[in-house]
Every structure is written in structure tokens, then in C-alpha cells.
Length: 237
Image (cartoon, rainbow, N blue to C red):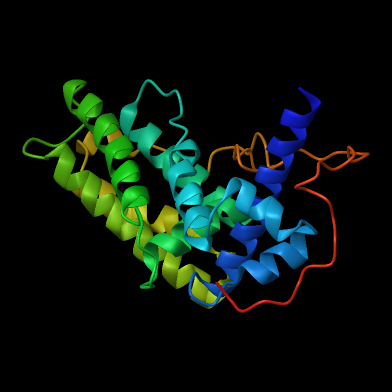
């Protein structure tokens, strides 16, 4: 059991460090050598969990779904608004999510499920908007699938601009502005004054992505594959 826990911690550490490198450098410029230098693990430990840099990226993309925590709101349009604000806040704080987004947005040599974050976000929004339509929140003729794609695409463009211009410091304000422009074409006029377009109260500022390893006060003895040794200098992978 202890060996299994150490293996899980090593895997999570590799994912988090890889996310930081992917977020900073992008997929093509990232190297397993730098990931190992930052993590303090051996190349054997890396290959025990992930056979390649591509496998690390795919594992991060696969975990993106966990960032789409749908808030419990009786008004489903408000739930969509809160979901986008929560996601924006996570982008500011969580390198794992930032890496997922960069891997999905940028053009690179990565052959993997790079469309998954878009598809997962659109599906979550589409489901909420379908419920909103059943509850009479949407304007007549609004198609939940089309609206979900528009919201997702608009948010994606805003977060890219925010990253370039302010390192996402102004992303919550941009999301609020997005909703002020989108709501008149989406919901019944009488609802707009009852919807909050500003970020909801922050309940937990610590990223809760499952690939983020919990802090430890005293590391456990490493296994044979996880021993901390000088990393041999190799070419980028």
C-alpha cells in the first residue's frame, strides 16, 4: 500500500511539473529533461508512469473534465454564468488547467485529444442551457447547442486575449463584460436584472485538480524507480 501511494505521488508530481512546463513553454518547446530536473525524479520514474512527453500531455487533457464543476443553481442560466467565472478563476490559479487550455489552443505537433476541452466545455454548457430552456429562461428560438458553442468560443477568445495582455489578471472582468453583451440575445428580458454577471463569492482559492499532489511535510522514502538522482542530460523529447 505504501509503495502504491508513493507511486501515485510520483505520478501526480510528474503531471503537475509537466503542466507547469507546458503552460510556460508550450508542447513543442517543452522537454522531458526539464520536467525531470524540476521534479527531481529519474527518467526511469517517468517511463514507469508515462512512456513519452505525448503521454503526459494526453493525461493532462484527459483530466480536463474535472475542472467543469457545474454549480448547483435553480436558475440554469446563472449556473452557466457561474461556471464560466469559476473556470476563469481556476485559470488564474491552477497550472494544470492552464496547461490543458494551452495544449488545446495552440497549434503543435501533439497528436492527441486536443479538442476534448472544447467538447467537454460545450457539453456542460449545452446541458445547462437545455434545462434553462425547459424552465422557460431562454428566448424563443434559442438553440442550446448553438448558444453553447457561441459562449464557449467567446470565452476562449477572451481568455487568450487576457493571457497575452495581462496574464489573465483581468479575465473575471472580461467574462462579466461578455455576459452583459450576450444575455440580451439569450434570455427573456425580465430575467436579466435578476442575473449576477460578476464573479460569485470565492469559496476556495486553492486549485482542486485531481492531478495536483497534496502537500506533504515529510516525503516518504523513494522506490527504486523514483529515487532522486542527477538527471542525465539528454536531447529534448
